[in-house]
Image (cartoon, rainbow, N blue to C red):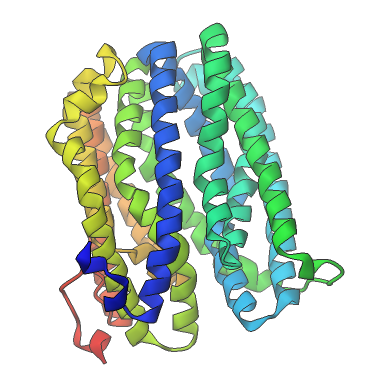
Length: 441
């Protein structure tokens, strides 16, 4: 940890380390709770029941992405910039319009999910049992969409602790309690009910915290140009769609071509491998607004130092997490029950892909916070295409292992391409130890 000694870091990196430490501790808490909930879920429902739950979770996640309309990073970008300038009228305008758009859009997607449940269950997944679960889960579309936006607003006012609690901790905490209470008696439906309650409670907490943090907004008439908001959010909406494809298409293809048990095994392995990205999410929670502020001031040199320092810190901190996932994956998967132990090799592949995701730095955040939303969108589109092609090629022959390989390949390709584009557009090399001449000026 001497490499991360605060006295050896510049002022911005010290702020990132302090803020990221808070966020990381919350992510550790959330990861521990989430890991425990996955074990409870797997042991209560078995591989097939867990597969049913993760399939309907996939569908509502899709609905929530459409409901957010790409506003996550747009709200963070514009709210952060206006908070730093003390322009609270614009902050309120961004907040009011962003939340209003999201409520309307997520409400429509939730209704569509409810109405189309029989078609999705029977024709897509060939499993009529999923109809009732899909209809219940549609109730989570609105709270799942807007709670994420409130988390970004809290990040914009530097309340990293509560932002991370809303984004990462409250849902798994409430879900774990609900799963323990409901899943043993009601099976997958009980798990779905627990998730709905978790998202609703999290949204209510987020609304209360935002109101507490921004008393200066009361009585102010907000104003922000709708065109400017949408011009930024629309490319990011498509980027979110591509990210969604990369995140969930393996689950869907397994659901179509394999069994619900395989979906459950892959989903558990993928969520476990995602523990590696705890550091990435924690650091991005504090560094992303700073990227936007530095770029708005034209300080590319400071932005480059911050990006490389963040990547170095993330790489060092991720090593203790990656070691057991790569070198003892069977033991880790065995914690979820004997049905999951065979997913060890898949876990190792997924963990390696996530490690590259961390080691290459916050490339997507840099592009989005510096106004290159369309570039980020293009990278996501290419990566999504790679993910679909890889899954189509590998899942029919290798099943769960093929899905894991496709996901890992996609993550590696996406992040290396992001590194190249950040270097070409900004002259910044995010990988520690590699510098461009422009980045050092």
